[in-house]
Length: 76
Image: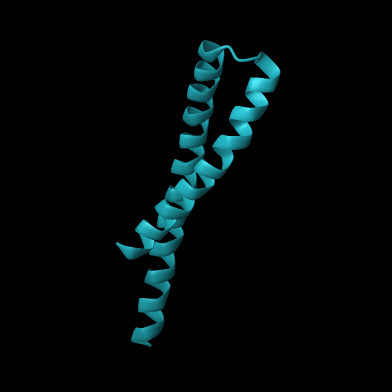
């Protein structure tokens, strides 16, 4: 469980780190129209969530494969 928690913390840090420049660039592009900024951020979070899921899935699959190979190696 510790490995998953570390990955989640790193990804949350990346998300927060991306929020400030994202909000600034959207505010400069659209002006301070809260509705457009909010909708754009919702799209951004949705797409970023899909990306995070793919990264988490990749991490999980490769971790399981590595553990499987290690167990096979230990048995020999």
